[in-house]
Image (cartoon, rainbow, N blue to C red; front, side, top):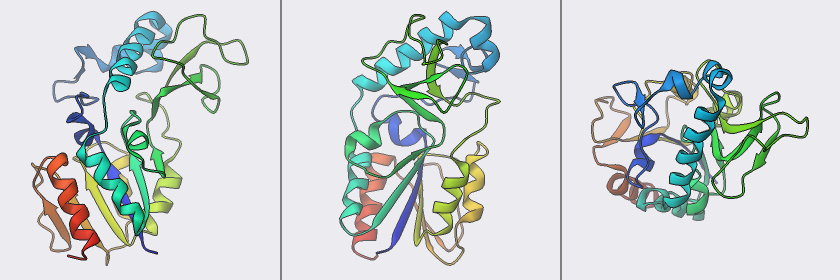
Length: 227
C-alpha cells in the first residue's frame, strides 16, 4: 500500500473559523506574538499567556472540521496516510484521520512547565494557576513557542522520506524548520500543492489554486482516480 504524506498549515483550518497563527502584521488575535508565544512572556506574565491560550482553546473546541479535513479521511480507504500538521488544533483527528503528527503541539493538551514531555489532556477549555503537573509545577498549553525546539521534526522527516505521494495544503512554507521538510521528499514522486496563491511552476508539482475546502476534495479525487 502506498504512503501518502500530507503537510498542512493554517489555511486548512481558516475555513473552520480559526485565525492563522501569525498574520503579516506580526499579530495573533491582536496580540504581539512576543507577548504570548515565548518563554519570556510566560515568565513575565503567566496569567496573560494562560488566558490567551484558554481563549484560543475555546475557539478550537467550538470549531468543526471542514470539507478539506473530511476529504483527507477518504484517502485512508486505499492508502497509508500520514498527516504532518503545523496547526495546534485537533480538527484532523476529529474529522477521522488516524495518523496525525503535530509539529507545534496541540492546544487541547497541557504540558509541564519543567518537562515538555509530560503532557495531559485538558477537560474543557480552561487551564488555571491551580492546574499543576506531577512535579507540582504549573501547566501551560502544549504549544511550541518561538525559540523552542520542534520535537517531532526527525519523525516528520522520516515520513517525508518514504512518501509515494506528497501534498502541501494551506501553508506557504515560509516558517522553518517545517519548511525544510520538503528536502526529504523523494524527487521522482507525485507532488501536490493546494493554495489559491501558489507560485509553484515546477513540472512535477500539480498545483490546485483553490481554497482548501474546494482544492482538497479535488486533489483527493485525482489521487483516488490516479489522475
